[in-house]
Amino acid sequence: MKLTIISGRSGSGKSTVLHILEDRGYYCIDNLPASLLTSLADRVLSGTSGVPNIAVSVDARNISADLELVPTIINELKTKDIPTEIIFMDANSQTLLKRFSESRRKHPLSNQKIGLKEAINKESELLEPISVMASLSIDTSNMSLQQLRDTIKNRLIDGKETRLALAFQSFGYKNGVPVDADIIYDVRCLPNPYWDTALRSLTGLDQAVVSFFEEQDDVLEMYSDIQKYLQKWLPMFEANNRSYITVALGCTGGQHRSVYLCEKLYKYFLDKIPNVQVRHRELS
Image (cartoon, rainbow, N blue to C red):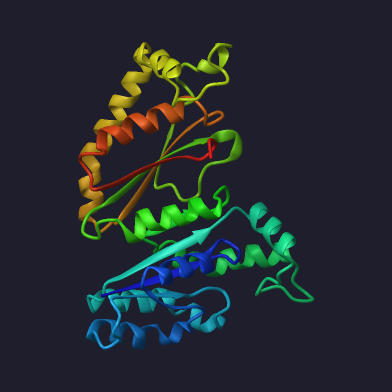
């Protein structure tokens, strides 16, 4: 039995995650008062809840005084050996502004004195103590609903709970660094097939681009260095009770170099780690 705490800024997809988990047999509670976390966790530990997994949403809708207690409560749960994980959902502020504007929903912290932008920033400050404790952070800024469903399914539902879940993500620096990345590699120093007009419209998934990179010593050396680093240090992350690691590789546009290297690393670790995925943010 396990207790999963879903937190994050409003509009980032928390409700969607709860619905996905509910469809998979979780007992889900939206907007649980933080002060009730301990008693709920005790039921999880005793096994009297009658369901294998429980997921609760704890966010800025809580009373501020209760919200401040969450880090302390979570630390207490760990001392009781209650299986607990924290999933923190987020998106960049511009995306959240757009989502609220399109849906015409009211932000829980906005009022006559606090506008939407200020409320979003204030919410980030309130939830920061929870975000730093998260075992998994998910940035939904550039995710479709189906991509979010796939991420939850792969990383929370189908993943091996006893082993580290590893995800590789390519991205383009021109669109910003992914906020949910644990390790980031900048590969913009490598040869860029963009300057070859025959390769410009292709991606790192196309054989012509793959062949281009396979002939570049710098690219192969970069791959070797990253692969050796991860192979050496991932067991240490796992030994330190890290359940999820997202390794992000970025080039200028997120189309060629980062995509190729993510694919190559994904294929290398595929038979070494039970739960490994790859995602190309800009190609999505």
